[in-house]
Length: 326
Image (cartoon, rainbow, N blue to C red; front, top):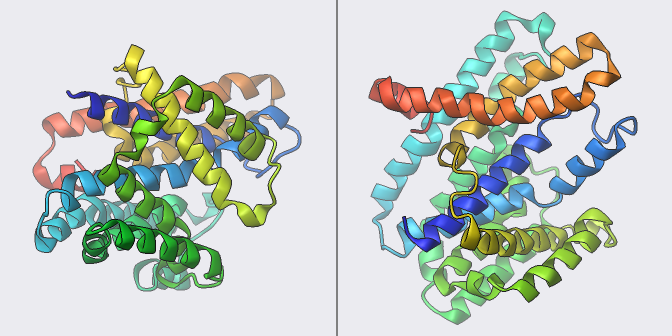
């Protein structure tokens, strides 16, 4: 495995770890003041972790498709298998589960929810599925990115348009995840351009790491900027994550190797096991269990899906592998 893949795999591993930590939420109360440390960690993660994943996806999209001039049809078929099939499989499974046990569900499924999920793509019984819809829609714009990467002027214009759409799109445009689409577009475009022009090489420096770390503390931890400038903490978080992982990969290239090859499967499955830990904590109602169950939720969210994915990848038929994005 080459150096580029090593360091990028470390970034992917860090990103997935952040997603799992962000999904712990044992008390199921956003910003719970009774758990200040866990809340501070969660709030810091949410300033940049999904833009980070979108940025990585853009980087890989250029590396695997745009830069190799992959035909649109081949790209489309590949992303249907990789994204659309798992989306449908997990959406339908979650819908059936909620219909079967509505009394246990915080958000039961009705006909309106089914229409919003499978026709308008406004919501989903499994909340994090918005990410897959947005990622698939972003990749459908493949010809735009081909034009955008044809020159530096086109690249600058493309990035500027993406930032403008991010800033002006109103939050109420939820049909087909349009708001989330434009909200994440600058990071996907920036990831593409980072891959094309190798911008990440400027981050592979101890002084840049120190600078981005200071900016991260100011923008993402202390939140010194107004919420209207949330694109800045997201960009800072991405830069800091890349700089950190580029440096770490020099010394520990196999960091996160125990789960980093199955990040998509962790994303799909991890929340179910973390919900079980959350239910256990609420039922026991014992503050002494918070820290051990918090750590257990992270471990289970990472490694149970990894073990399941490894088994499916080795023993399952092809159709089942596709349902899990393998």
